[in-house]
Image (tube, rainbow, N blue to C red; front, side, top):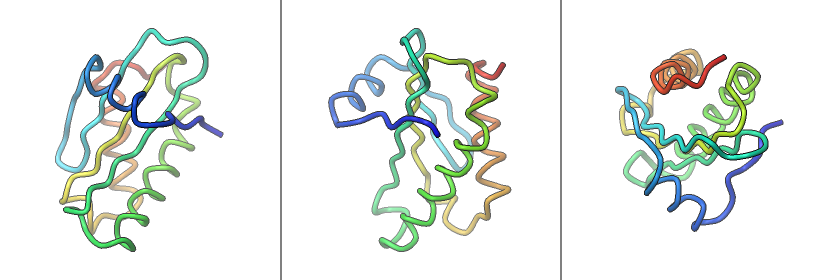
Length: 109
C-alpha cells in the first residue's frame, strides 16, 4: 500500500518546488530527495466532470499507483493531476499515461 501525501501545505510545497511533466491525459509533479516511502496525491478538478466521474478517475489513478509503486525509486513526493481528456479512458490508458510520466521523470528503477 502506498502512502498519501497529506494536507494542503504538502501539496503546495510539491507544486512550488517539484518538477512537472505532462502528457495528453495527466500532469505529474515530482519532488525528489525526500526520506521514506513514496507519497502520492491526486487532483481531479470539477472541470473534468461530475462527482461520479471524478471519483472513477481517482480510483483508476490509485489502482495504477498501487500496481506500479514497486517499480518506482523511493523517497519521492508525487502529485498526479487529471486533465479533461482522461474522462472517457479505461484503466489501460490511464496506467500507460502514469508509466509514461514516471519514465519521463526518470524515477523508475
